[in-house]
Amino acid sequence: MGSSSELTVAARGHGHSLQGQAQADRGVVINMESLQGPKMQVHTGNFPYVDVSGGELWINILRESLKHGLAPKSWTDYLHLTVGGTLSNAGISGQAFRHGPQISNVHQLEVVTGKGEVVSCSEKQNSDLFYSVLGGLGQFGIITRARISLEPAPEMVKWIRVLYTDFATFARDQEKLISGESTFDYIEGFVIINRTGLLNNWRSSFNPQDPVQANQFMSDGRTLFCLELAKYFNPEELALVNQEIKSSLSQLNHFPSTLFTAEVPYIEFLDRVHISEIKLRSKGLWEVPHPWLNLLIPRSKIDSFAHQVFGNILKDTSNGPIIIYPVNKSKWDNRTSVVIPKEDVFYLVAFLSSAVTSSTGSDGLDHILSQNKRILEFCEIAGLGVKQYLPHYSTQGEWHAHFGPQWEVFVRRKSTYDPLRILAPGLRIFPKQMSYSS
Image (cartoon, rainbow, N blue to C red; front, side, top):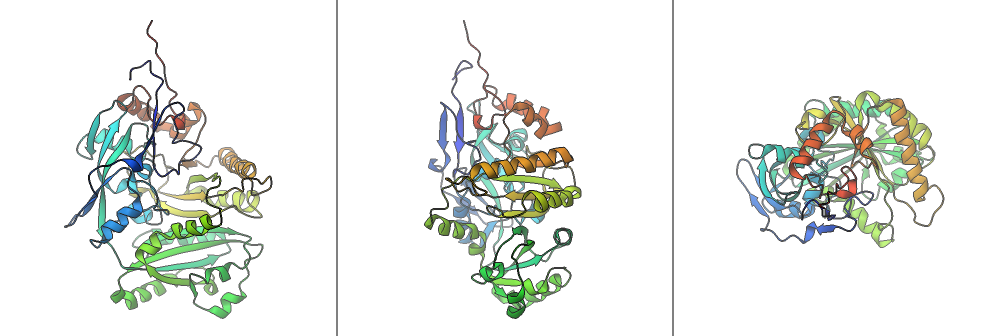
């Protein structure tokens, strides 16, 4: 396949890329889940790890590693995604404040570059390719194998939710929890806009600490902020864990009447989104457009963002979960290709909307895309220094702006590992260059 070929190649994991980015017009799309490599291998010992195919789903890695009392350290909220897919972006969930994203917990990769070379790489071997591919949006190579760091797995999880009405107080408590030695192993949050009977809905999975007061709390017509926490434990540690949780919660400023808790198996907690997926599929509400918008926002700008977006742009309702939580930049490796804000603490804000296909109203695709555009325009005009996670742009100029000072390194890596611009054309970062011989 020479420089005159139009052929391009895209790797498709479990089909969760946005805006058709895992497609290749008139090209080849590789179904990564179909790759038949060596069997998943868990290695125990002082520094445990697992060797897996790039097309393996994280849920399968969890199930296999749990047989050995082990599990990966860092997750995504949804586990039915491929290893290669999340490592090509970052892989973020509520453990990232402590362990960093999934790309900070990889020892080694096997990569097929745009030149067709099969290369093993790690921090010490072919390190430039290793860091290029991690968070590299599939631009430099296709991840065919990965060695993932593991840790001892707990049996159970104490799962906690509390509510706030004031965003600044909510954010301050989140930031307090991710600094220093936190009691909790998972820290996230979400925004709730005008939800009727919210706490009653929680009762199907959680227990209120004070049922009478919880009954009196009204969520109708309000914008609320939910702090979601998890503490991992083994059954014999429960009394001590309850004590630690009580002490940590006493230092927060949530509404006491909204404290809800649950005790669930570790695998059930980590696979919680799949449980929701099954319910949505049964109602025909899963296979619909998902015009998601994921933003990384500097800590110093989060109040301005929240005031405008949750106060003016999204006033009446949301069309899906809005997740929001801070992470520590020190847990991210600046040698990778991922783009993050400059500040030591920044927030992930994820608008995980679902559109009603036939609707022309506020739950329709056009309205949600317009809303996303308004949010992005506000960020741009206000100069918030926001970066898109799972980014989508239409022009190379926009990509250049997204990468900022990292653009030159990104371009150099592309020319080194995929000079013919064969890989991942759906992102439109590097249009295919044609050279014709006479």
